[in-house]
Length: 471
Image (cartoon, rainbow, N blue to C red):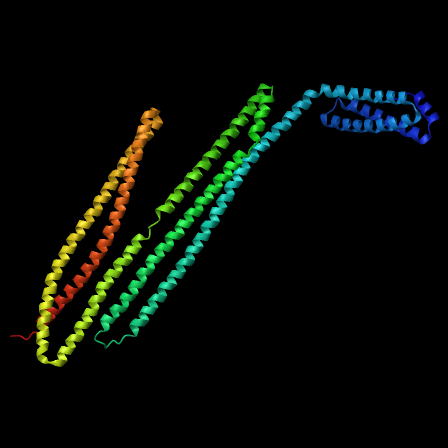
């Protein structure tokens, strides 16, 4: 601090306000320095507060002294006063140097806290992403459930309306009409066709909806994988920890940093593995969507079979109507023609029974052959599937037991070959099954029509025999 003589000299040369300001600022510097020295033996927080006060006092006093002493031409005194300030600063710096180790330890602790916070933030971001994806999937599942529920209600109403229209048409028929039963059959046949066509259309709609849902879910899984991978790519924590490890000289702290790096790297590996799994699931979903093409094929074949059956039934129905009407005309024309027509009918019925039974036997034999063909294709596919499993097991065993590269390549090639053969067998089985189903539907329809014709012919024969006069 400035001595008394210097202060008196200042007062005699300058005005009182300027001298008092300079003396006041120098006094503040002295007080601040004293507090800093006292705080050196106390806690770091108190020392830090004292140092802040001292620094502010030094800046204020330096500015005042330069201005005031420069105006008086007392440059030497100003320099001396500033040197006094520097001396006081040195005292505090010496204390800070003595406590440097504690300050460095505090900095390390702060950095450790930052590292831990970064690690926890990375984990929290991953959990938050998973939670968001789970909620999105839940909402989409609920949306699909409501859509399916609404569609089910619409279809139920549509089916009920069709039933109402059919019953209305049936109720409008004249029950006294000789052709009432046949006309009713034709009405029912009409609505059977409508229902069959509608079932095929619904199967196609359901297939498209399912494909869209599978594709949408695959897109969401891809997006989730992108987000996970982006989080790993943007993670600067590992780089920061590696830089700290390189600069760190303390073996214990270096070891701790290495453990943190290993933990983060392992977590990133898990994230990348999860992203890879999601992409595999997305690819599987897309393949599943592609495999659904033609899922409505069975419904389309069934619709065709229904139309074939109805064509036969309708033809038989119309034929019965024609026969009945012709019979009525013959009865009205002459009595003699009735017996002739009856005899002709009996002969025709006998022929229908004989030929019908023979035709039914041939059709049943053909159906058995078709079933055997479908079973053979299924058996071949099952055998190929067994070969795939064996090849997969051989390959997995080589991978697990560390087989040679040549052995694994050969095993993998064999596995791929078996899978290709299995796929070919599956396609052949599906194609054969579709063909057999179509053929069996047609055969069944023909058998039913023939059985109906035979039964009717037998019924007429029995009736004619019962009506014949006893002789």
